[in-house]
Length: 75
Image (cartoon, rainbow, N blue to C red; front, side):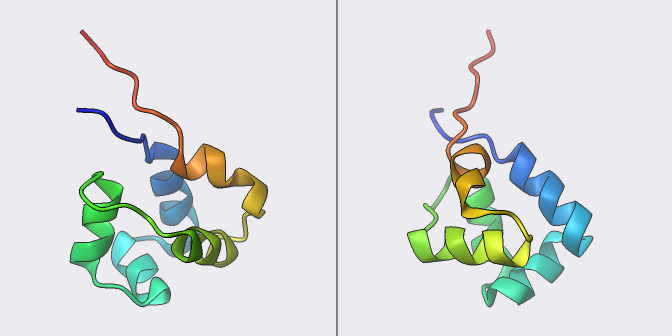
C-alpha cells in the first residue's frame, strides 16, 4: 500500500505528549481520527499539519519530513 511513513511524527508525539490520546486532545480531534491519519486512511489538512508543528514545537520547515516521507516498500 502506498502511503506515508509517520514514524518520525509518532516519535515526536510520544516525546512531547507521551501518548497519541494526549496529542489528539491538543489537536481537538478524536483518537479515532488521529489513528486514521497516522495509518494513511485519511489525509492531513494543511491547517492540521501547521497546528501539529506548532504543538510539537517543530518549525513548519519540517512538514515534509514529518508528513511526506514515503513508506519504503519491503519485499
